[in-house]
Length: 112
Image 1 (cartoon, one colour):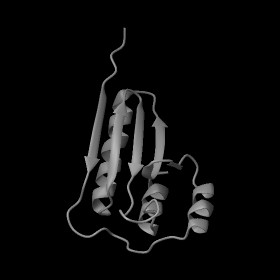
Image 2 (cartoon, rainbow, N blue to C red):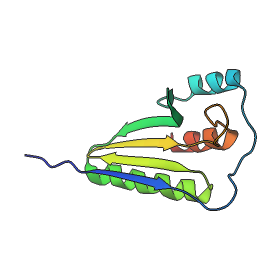
Image 3 (cartoon, rainbow, N blue to C red):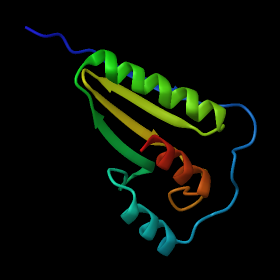
């Protein structure tokens, strides 16, 4: 019998968000079409991706890497670890349509 543990982590950096440029809806759709695995979810702001790994240790290592990279870029992210899966949400700037900026897309591209 296997035991699956779910962990949720929200990383919030102090200080200003890294990018203030708002992207037009057309550019959002064009950019999303080029980014494999990333998607918008209705009612949930930000970009989302689920990654699967061969083991829970690999998923934990990936989650830690996401948090380190987001902290360096001063970008807000949420991570949910569930066994061998990692759910990543890169959160945009509040008060804008989905909050998408170049910084959100740059981090998503860096994470693959």
